[in-house]
Length: 304
Image (tube, rainbow, N blue to C red):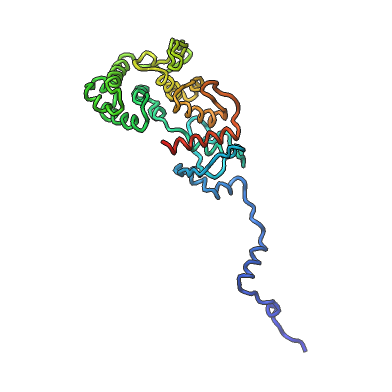
């Protein structure tokens, strides 16, 4: 006698429960993450690149014995005009590359950089910044620009009115006279586009040694109040604005601490070079140098 049966009746019914689900998951093939896309997705870097608004959270410290940077820093990929790719010196999964990314997010923000398209504004700004804290000088600069936005208008300003705007900075009478004279001269003899091939050296007195030295002439050298700080600022920022391929900034050896900090950042981030204000470019950046520079820039942000 033959029995009649269903094939399905011989199949062991599947158990429902957490243990069975876990076994099913374990039986799947392991997920292989692409080194080209997965890391960026996990870190959320794609959205940071698109929005360019991820704020850094600096929670790093430097181990003095090893020179290693510990902790972490939220990173985004800023794009700067100096680099066609926007991400210079990046190698996959490199510790140095991570430091470069952090460095890019710590670019020093100077008023000279913001007004580099207008040498007159830059000269007004550095006149106010000379021996004055930026937190006092920069708001005053914008107040002056709101009231006298052009060289013509500032050249016609009443000294007493200008003095009242800048009194809290100190030496207000000297600064007011200089700003008015600067604006008049700027109208009468405006600077031309900088061409280093046509410039000759000029006699210039540096404050630290008070002896005449040779200093490159610039299109603004003839204007009142253009000392080393003003000329260095012009050569670092305005020349690059006039000609993005200009390398004039590489020849500047400033004494101002903010310009020194900016050039240390730029040499490291753009050229991958260690730089000193007395020796110039020294060598290719090391992990230790980048770590120290990052801590220095972070400390400057915290203290400002």
